[in-house]
Image (spheres, rainbow, N blue to C red):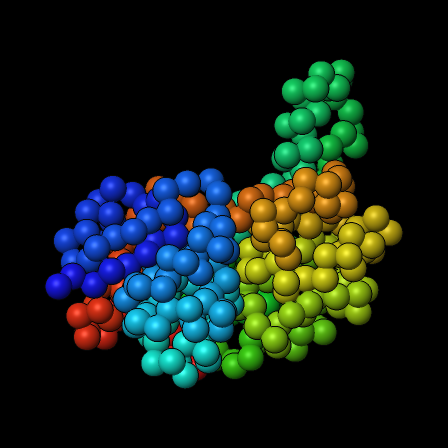
Length: 321
């Protein structure tokens, strides 16, 4: 008898077909609306496997409502939306999809850095609104990227991939990480430093840490005051890594120069969020991994993780405490 699974968002047809070969698939078919909490709690009652996204909070309430659940397969690298400890206590496997989105997310991170530094979104709007009347020496001037100093906080796969891209711009790359990666320093030509030094010396600061209790508001008022007045902050990690109110104050007080944000504390973000009103903020709707090929690889890996676990095999990528 096939196990029953629930998929919390419409997935590409090949992925649906793959899952259907091994499982009875129930699915939330609204592509642009997260599954309502009450629907999720009802759907998990009889399932053996859950294929979910970061938009779903899989906490103790959900886990207790799913007595037959064997595996939670998250289509994401991060898994802060899942109570991993509660899952482990109930004997539930948790899996994720790292690796397959490294290059795509790194591309987006560097693109966001460039767009913020050179005011591309602001300049695009300026032109399209008919405000461009002539060329002038200080019109839409931004920050140089070539030869500048890049600080990377969080030096895992994506951090290292961003450092590779920075080498093409002859950037001096500093990094801070919980554990030093000495083998990568010679390979990538980067320097390990403490976070305070990184914040003080960097022209661009990229946040690439996982979100947890240790990284909650890692960047707040104190950290922002350490940065250069010309510094640009880029966050493609998780919104909770930055104190958004402190960032807003730092930007309007010109304590830092600009920010590029792909993630927010609450998603989808409220269009009235004060940060979005600032011209020196480039804001994106969490599209770090959003290429067609990468999203397909993520979905495929999430499906493999789920199927393997239900067949009593080891998932390709398992989350461990």
